[in-house]
Length: 463
Image (tube, rainbow, N blue to C red):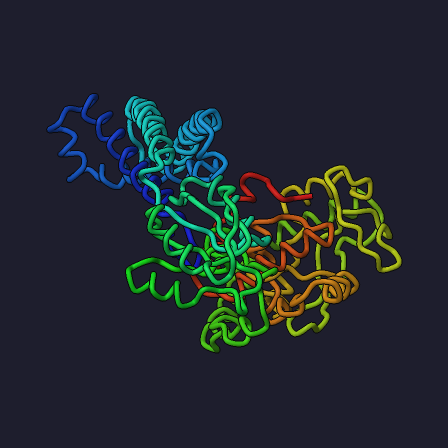
């Protein structure tokens, strides 16, 4: 796994993305050579701004590939889905480049070159994907691992490593003190270390993942230390779970982990920088969007009776309540009694204009005022109403720790999880929120904003 912007990405997927950027560059260069010749292509690249034009076309291609989730685990293992999305991405490349060339004619490349480059890059990308699938399907090219434990964490890791071949792991065995995954009879506690060492050497294991629920008196520490001295990689299961899923393993989370973790201690200079950015960007946003917000205000008042701005109490940093502002998207008085019912896609409470506002997220523009005031920031755990927060805090361990930072208009849980309705949804949301708090940084905030922009373009997550 490669750590970038305080998040983790499979090394094979990153290499695939970089190789596809090179292939797209090669495809457009070949198209230029076909229509202009080698000499004229060199002249264009060095003296006529051809390099910048080429870089723009490749950047648009890479962005469209990412926006169509071509590096998502589900897409990577499906040839049919890959083919469909590659075609969609290449069609979007043509549309986006046409728009850019209309607005900025100086960046234009001849349309014959663009179309040929797109067609060539599509062919090369599909070949690269077939090669990627071949590599991922070869057991010999994967790291052989053993999972030590049989609890819920061990099962989740087993499922993840078997489904996500791009991670580069092959589970050859799952061991417990009572039984072995391959069906042989179990062995007792006294013989466990010896059997563990024998089996690992026989299976040519390269990594051991410790995912035991209760390790006290059961973890073969001495045997693992001997194996580590011989060069074996020993990894904590909760740590690996966090790396490959982007969320904290709540079932394995202990108070000591929070107590001694380097996370949950946000540097003061980072908070100052984040607050200054929030003030500047929210001020600019309010000024730029003021005409649009006035237009939306008049449209809401015309569409249905009631105030244009909806006010609601939310829980902020350190559990302190504040008033959140949004454009009203539902009929006035639809949430009387203080009970919040999450919206669904066909919610009868939404007005005609409200459905459009929620789909485009324009109903959240007044939150720029919350950000300017300091109630919220652009990135952080999403704030919820007091009764929902109190219910979750009573029923979900460690839930109040998400109040350690200022809530945000978007967050790590929002870009990975979406809407939360049930208690189980909120448990998973907390797992993402705690990951964000433990890894909070400028880089992770930028990654979340980038993912949010991608979700807005795809109109995902709106209800």
